[in-house]
Amino acid sequence: MRAVVIGASGGIGAALTARLTAQGHHVTALSRSADGLDITDEASIAHHLGALAGPFDRLFVTTGALELNGTPPEKTLRALDAQAMAAQFALNAIGPALVLKHALPLIPRDAPSKIAILSARVGSIGDNGLGGWYAYRAAKAALNQLVHTAAIELARSHKQAVLACLHPGTVATPLTAKYAGGHPTVPPDQAAAHLIAVLDSLTPAQTGGFFDWQGKAIPW
Image 1 (cartoon, rainbow, N blue to C red):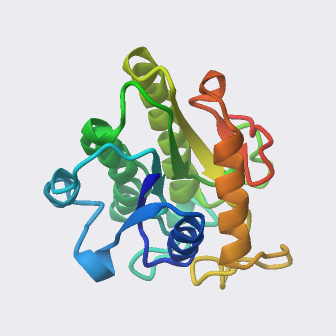
Image 2: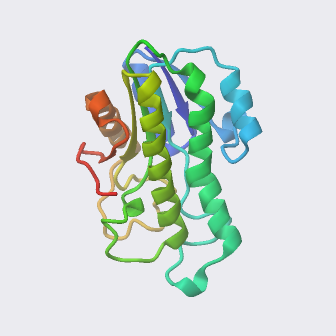
Image 3: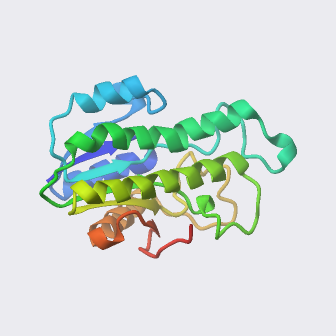
């Protein structure tokens, strides 16, 4: 069993790397801090993924950020900033889509494979009852659409593949430290266990879906 974890230096990525390794996977762990992989730079993505020899039966993309360059999530339309919004889309939507583009040659055509892209419940339009967090919500909603569309294409050539958006819950990492509020959090290792279990449970009939850490479908 061979796996790739993109964003392996983060809390969830590191926990996934450790747990997959403990389960017997040979894990290729890539991150910006350890390897120089910049998910907002297509040339960097192409270089790092192009250096790998497939096939891989598991791929996790765990990159993302809620607060970029010191800009907090917007509470009102008056706080919208074009550059901050573009940065959110570059990191949280475009980057993972480009990873899928360049990972395609690493995915087996004639064997099962499971691919998880970490999304967030706040990217759900149907579940949005609070408003706010404009750029992050919109970027995650765009990510969901990109992944769903990619899953449709992938199913035509990789009939045993599963590609899904997964919401890990509120995980106790630096990403959520300032924004967890009263929400219960789980440690990264527990979140990793949930994510692996959910991904392993999904079938090709569920490819392109959006699921939470319990395996429950989230409305688009």
